[in-house]
Image (spheres, rainbow, N blue to C red):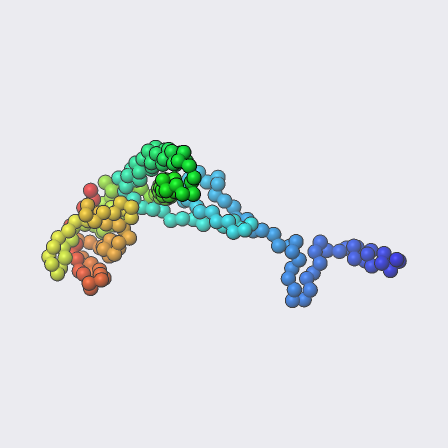
Length: 219
């Protein structure tokens, strides 16, 4: 007993909080603390962030801005209002109606309504994300001799001599039939920074196409 007491006294006197790990071994479990990165919850303005939580570790990453015209922003806002005030209540009512028809496991109307609800909520989340990261650009206030976002560019196909007129807009605004091309499209990327008289070469499935810039407008 005296030997046991002596060993206990030696181990408790001036003992460190954690014993050193054995050679080649891992640190004691108690020394492993979760790493928590600060969240931007208090940031009312500035760039948006996305939070990812893996186990007890939380990681924050900044997300890129989404360029769009004033008209494009208003179009998103209108879509969001329609989804929230018309589509969402309608599908909720449809789900409630389908519940009255009995067994949900074999209720096709119920499952169709739930699928529709999931799609609507996904659209709402996507639009809200775009609007939160929106970099709204008033094209009427732009000017310059070089092509950039918002510019309306007239070009001619050097092979066919066919002329076309395009405005460079945000991805969700693009509609080639309406003369609007996405800023991320090959033609828009090729024209960015160019001036009237410059020739832009674009790789297409049918080969390289060359377009000469005829006119640059800010409308």
